[in-house]
Length: 169
Image (cartoon, rainbow, N blue to C red):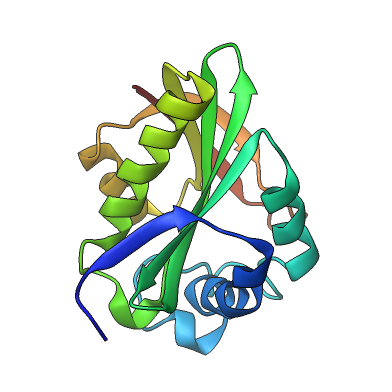
């Protein structure tokens, strides 16, 4: 695989190749190869093609795909929340390729889209509060834990809580 990473806006045609990467990065045994997974916290699929297609089709959102050559290796979602605020989510890199700097490049690309396409001056994200290593990754990228907590979008017992992180752009 070539070393050069390409990041661009995903199309509907990209989704069949991208969806399995997302699932491998977040859930199941393969996710445990990497360090950013939720496999020990949440079971079941992370997303589906219909949800990804809705993101691709929504003018206030961008799904950026990361490619090595023509192989999908990750993605990030950027949403325009209005009032100069953007949201970063669904960041993932194939677990076998994590720690290679690709995630950092996706975060930078997402911030650029937020600023340039949505006019955002701030960006936020949510991270499960027990994911200390992941929280530290974002803090090294200039995000700060705001103190705001939000419920995890899936009802679990015991429940998970999300920390809201923010960054000025």
